[in-house]
Amino acid sequence: MPSLLSPGPVFVFESITASRRWQVYALRACFVLALLASLTMVVWSTVGLDYNNPKNGAVAHQMGRLGEQFYYAISLIQIALVMLAAPAATAGSVCLDRARGALAHVLVTDLTDREIVLGKLAARLAPVAALVFAAVPVLALASLLGGIIPETLLWLTAISMALAVFGCSLALALSARASKTHEVLMGVYTIWFL
Image 1 (cartoon, rainbow, N blue to C red):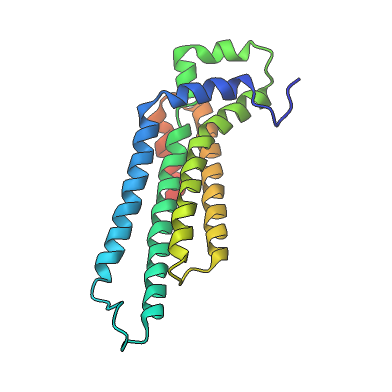
Image 2: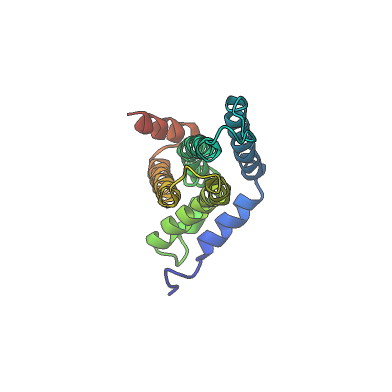
């Protein structure tokens, strides 16, 4: 009997098939582009600030404001992406296997229900967690400008991971009942909206 810490066969299979999808790489590229676009917009909005003027005396304050605006821009992008990407990553996990006939093969194996569900959830949650943790170094560098309390980085990461786990779990639960991926996505996004 495998322990909870060892990866099960469902996790390994789901991870291998997920790594072959081009959408995973496109999502990462879009995330990096969104981060760069938000940082560019913040810099353009503060272009009028004179950082090199020694008479100003408020350069540290201006840099702190710039760091604070970086934090707000990145945190909004990250939470919006997690709320959109987590359900999308998990939406088709059960209903696609049922449509292909692979779910019947998985159910007749020696795996328990818990191993199947947790394996699918962990395999679909791993890329979303990678996106959340990819923003941490960017925020840590932005905190060198000032204006960002270091504890807020931990809180943002914890909130983003909680939203990712909730979104993936909700999509997996709805995927067990729905027959199409778009039905799952519409259900999760409706629940997010409410």
